[in-house]
Picture 1: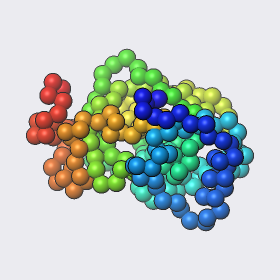
Picture 2 (picture 1 turned 180 degrees about the vertical axis):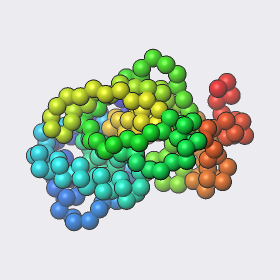
Picture 3 (picture 1 turned 90 degrees about the horizontal axis):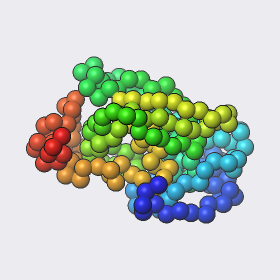
Picture 4 (picture 1 turned 180 degrees about the horizontal axis):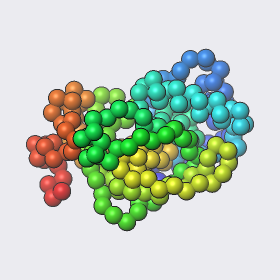
Length: 220
């Protein structure tokens, strides 16, 4: 949990009402942007607030919103739902050199409830990240290259999986969302760039040029 995340007493009725409203709307909801309190709250653990059918419908909806954005992950708080649920998938075509440097391999779709991760022994790596709740900017974030993820699957089974490279980065980013943490909380602030500046200057496979020119991570 982030030191500044606000613990909340979130009722099951509030969560159910919010989800019911979103599902009944018949349109894809907007993604909540930074500054909304729900992104700074410790989301409620899933413990049956939704029926199996409602949970399945919500996961399908989140999958669609993520694809439309487009993105590689979406957490329930990003739709205004204070629940520990996220969906992840990375099937984008990526330049082979970029994929090799960043350890980016396809990530099949999955949904996770009540996730937590632990870094595995090894190095950290810094790369630029963006966020669907922080439109228009990107920043470099140092993260463990490999993590062990514990979570509950939508069918109720407890699972443990290990991820490395870009997959580990996605897992950490989305799990952080459920604990009131945005990627800028972990970012090198001197690296912050608009999407346009990033595309024009810093979209190389690694961050060495950006690190040198913008003056961050001097000892990396």
